[in-house]
Image (cartoon, rainbow, N blue to C red; front, side):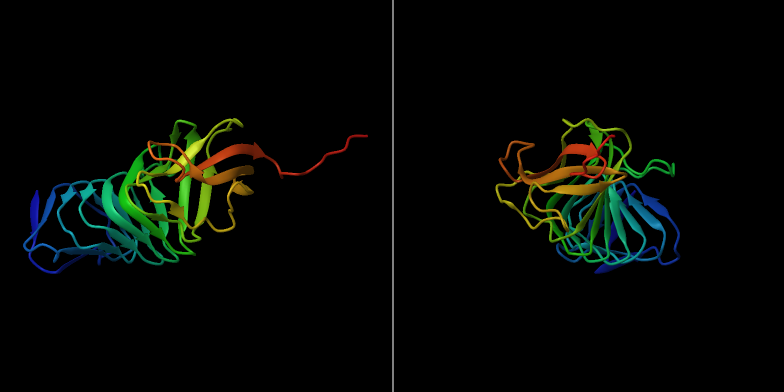
Length: 233
């Protein structure tokens, strides 16, 4: 399917239904095309978008499984998911980011798939959720430009029992610029609660790709409350 946007803004999802688009989305004049997602349903984009204006997600879930020239701005109460390629991703306070492929099985949210973006900018109050199935099967984001974590909240779901030497590169920064900002309450190298009874450390100066010292990783994962001493009599 080839769809040409002849207006400045194309709004979808107003009837709260869930839909899928798998085709080519074109624009008449450069810089004029924009998508706006409304409604409580989900919109899955599996095709190719040539719209250079930012897609705005105001409500529901936008699943970016295709290739999108423009960026995506996610507002409070809305969710961005998917394993495609997009422009700049901006996550405002109250927004949720579930990188990876979303499945209809309620027991499975994401798998080891990567969402690629030209840049990442997150606000405090935004939430990123990463699911871990094993050390080689987990959620990941790849950025080809600046990364600003902005004090966003990071949530981790361990769906297996990790080993202490497992390392998870959750954000790969392929640019030469440093990763700025930190996740809320997670300073460099500090022991932090990761959810599901697990604790670990977070680094913002890791090397998980060809660039040096600007990737984000989780490592030294343990169970139980760190620093607790148990005495036996």
